Length: 397
Image 1 (tube, rainbow, N blue to C red):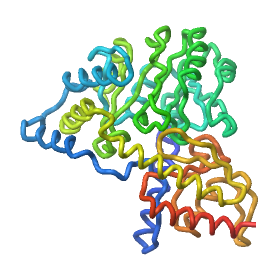
Image 2: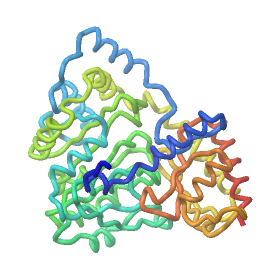
Image 3: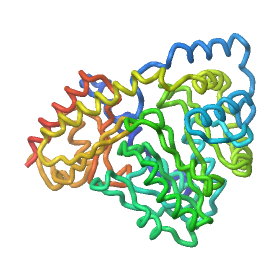
């Protein structure tokens, strides 16, 4: 018997990937499964970006890349941050990685030691918890209730910080809730961080361009704490480039240098072809993908309207990303006479088996009273999926 490390035993399998795998297995068995579990836009990568990748190949950008990314790409990221966010960074402060997830992991591993604490608002993106566990960092979770739009308050943050706190990790727009922090709310959090100079902030902004409120607000805009902010972003969501695996971070030169050192021992530089494509994405005006934003908003409104017809389901109004995170606690303890729903995971498996719709249990995101529904698919499939969910839930008493 192979004895695995305690490190890998501490990690959980990603529930989003697990549900996607289970739905693929059912599809292979001939079931008509609608997958609402993955956070992946159903639009294609823009033509101009694909052409830039082809040009990169023709120009023989096929060799090892600098660990922290091509200089022209890092400069274009600086230009994007100035254009879209009015933030001043230099190329030495940028590290390009194999996806935003790696940028988060690099930051956690470079900034923490075992036994320190990371404060994480819950609901949270599934990987924050396990990346912290991999670094042997203790997670401290702040519950953000649906009544407060799944956003924490400055008072909650203040109470959670201790002398052992090293990191605060959050996303806005948020996965899984779609909640978006306003400038006023971010300023209140920033004031807490001003009083706690030992805390660094990882701000995951991968859904920046899927924001129904208008202008995206970054916590990095507050100069008094900017040196402690690690801004994480990428091209996966805003430019439909999930498979290209290209993310980046912007931070102080010291942190960027440390993350480059770490990445050099893990993956080295990101794919050369993906970087040439990302260079074009950074130069693309976000207005060119406005049609996608409008479509996501239409889908959000459609799903929310349909969910109103399901008794005892509670929802908020998500202002970004492409998820709805309904509270399903009223269905816990109910039964279809064959099995009893004891958790949101049970409910998700019930919906998958009875309705052939894949959604993700809230336990994966730190809220066992909810499930995550992705509306990054066609209106036709969304209408059918919600109809099936409604019919399946009606059988529970």
